[in-house]
Amino acid sequence: QVQLQESGPGLVKPSQTLSLICTVSGGSISSGGSYWSWIRQHPGKGLEWIGYIYYSGRTSYNPSLKSRITISLDTSENQFSLKLSSVTAADTAVYYCARAATNQDAFDIWGQGTMVTVSS
Amino acid sequence: SSELTQDPAVSVALGQTVRITCQGDSLRSYYANWYQQKPGQAPVLVIFGKNNRPSGIPDRFSGSSSGNTASLTITGAQAEDEADYYCTSRDSSGSHVVFGGGTNVTVL
Image 1 (cartoon, rainbow over the protein chains, first blue to last red):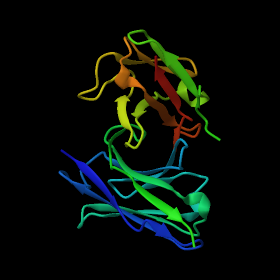
Image 2: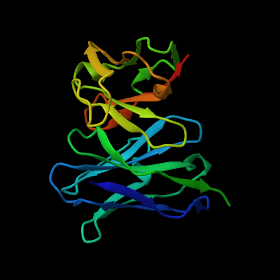
Image 3: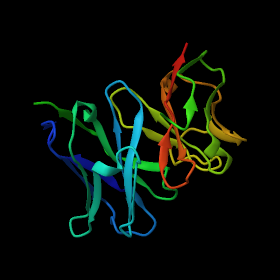
Image 4: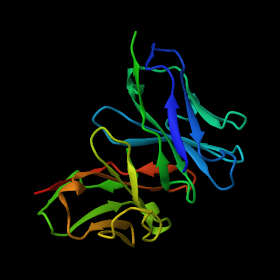
């Protein structure tokens, strides 16, 4: 079955760019109909959708973060990635990658999550 | 601020029924999906679409919708159902995903 695994630095300095990769195993990232999303959770808080990339490459981003986000696909590596620029302490969170196989908001498979701390 | 509103917390006696609600204007046009999250774990999809359960989700979980309110019902709550529950749907534009603020369910 499809599994997702996030990877990337656990510590990022303020003003730098946070970069995370989600590796997809057990299935192809370019299979039809799937939305590949990033979601984050601030410590002790609720879930926040960051954005998704459709298998075709089309993207949609949270309007509140849009100016700082880039989500891209790497079909050769079966991965998708998140870049969040100009980070501040407010970007400290657990970051999840997730798949929505049918509707863009029905996330049926999640990675385990990775904690990213923004601090100097 | 979230376009989907959930009560912060509810409690239910063991074996009883609890309904968790999610309110938002976009729910008049789109179904809600529901997730269960236990401490230190990733969320798990428990209901999607009109009232669909992914494989492995017990049938005590069900979903419904009326007007601008979607509901997740747990019929015969078990101790293991104690968790945070989140709804998702689209925003008013239909182009973006939004999460509700979450409801903490305590099983007494």
